[in-house]
Amino acid sequence: MAEQAPEQDRAHAAVLDEAHVGDIRGAFGTIRQQDLGARRTWRARLLTLAAIVGPGLIVMVGDNDAGGVATYAQAGQTYGTSLLWTLVLLVPVLVVNQEMVVRLGAVTGVGHARLIRERFGRFWAWFSVGDLFVLDFLTIVTEFIGVDLALSYFGVSRYLAVPLAALALIAITASGSFERWERFMLVFVVANFLIIPLAVMSHPRSAPILHGFVPGIRGGLTSTSVLLVIAIVGTTVAPWQLFFQQSNIIDKRITPRWINYERVDTVLGSLITVVGAGAMIVTTAFAVPRRHYGAFVNAGVVAHDIGQHLGSVAGALFAVVLLNASLIGAAAVTLGTSYAFGDIFGTRHSLHRKATESPGFYAMFAGLVAFAAGIVLIPHAPLGVITTAVQALAGVLLPSASVFLLLLCNDREVLGPWVNALWLNVVAAAIVGVLIILSLILVATTIFPTIDVRVLLVVLFGVLVAALSAGGVAHLARRVPARAAPAPDEPQRRETWRMPPLALLGRPAWSRGRTAAMWALRAYLVVAVLLLVVKAVELATAHPVAH
Image 1: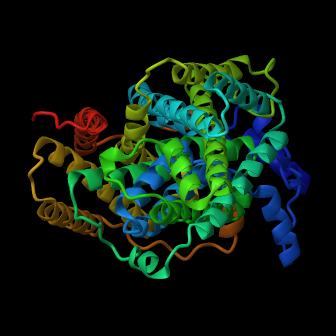
Image 2: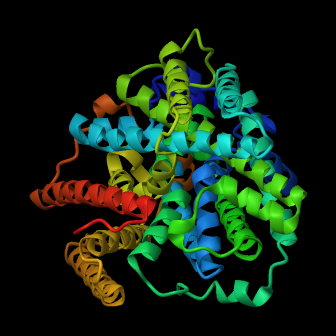
């Protein structure tokens, strides 16, 4: 009878594609679909974790991509180690956001874009995914800029380096084997650790590093420093991560039974990402001549600077780190976009299928790669402006993506016993509020460049605290009586509960207040993005734009 449980779950779940049901075949092991045994020893638990590990590591390390390398290098070169504290604060942001995605993927068996479409309608799906497509495409362009800069350090022409990288990414992804693809990605994850010996070679000093974990910005809080903080947030916590990890968990066939292992995978990925980002800031803070923000050129120049100050081996090592970051970033972002494309248009989208079985899915992947690579090959294309703006754009769009994530994770028809706890909603709401504050500061300082940023920061945080307090009071006022103690079989029910087919779920009702808030957020994002473009062009041209 135990062996029939998975089939029964599938019959009553929303999973539509048979490629997403079956054995978990990871890079380091396999878990059979009928395996319902308890893991009672540490050896059994570690072997299970080895088979599960992958989506969390790849999504996190993939965000330390070419744009991330450039952003962290700018931070170290311009502000030294004074922005290290931002990375510490980003750990809970990463873990909270992606843990919600883990539950959505394992419990629903449905991709993030499709859930938004089915629960909120086509308009809001296109609002969410349309932003994602634009941002992701620009991000993929920055990955190929990174490939060009990295291999040009070794004298390889961009007209050879970029097409070869594009072909390699398409070949790795279109192999028709999830297991083989994941092994390639985990090689990139391991190569990410090359930044550690490079940081050691930069001869760092402990006192500035320790001081960097105390909140503050060298030179004070200005619109330019806020732009860089938003860029750090955007390159470390990006909207594409939500879509990628949820679909990758589904593609790997992870079910609620294995959620705790995937949570560990996600936390490990978060820690590795932040350590790598910190090592990058430390390297450039001690090994590269200090320059003001507008004087930063690109990561390729940083590689040459490191080569001049630390030796050719160090310069080559930085170029390899940049190349590795570009490749894993391009692979993950493009795949996440292709997953979302499959969700919206209903095409088959699984790495378990060959190209002949999912032509639309792989055509989308190949088209994005080819088009992005082609833009990098255009002479005199504004690559510097794209690289500067895309990370901050991710930070500006993240609140919108987080709002939809929060709504889905409080939808009982979608997550049943897996919905957010109250404390998690409070933390997630605070995170969204802080992200909105950062983008509001960027907007205000772009329109009013002489505004006192410190005063603005205090006022906005005061408004946030008041809003959260009011929300808490409203929640307590309408709180339902405490639920009875969970039944003895509650843990087992959670392990086997899957979202029913979407056609059986009622569409959630939106109050007038929620609808108005969503439209206000949409209007604000349009204004914020336009002003972000103004700020990026202003910095790229090094001439203030008249306000």
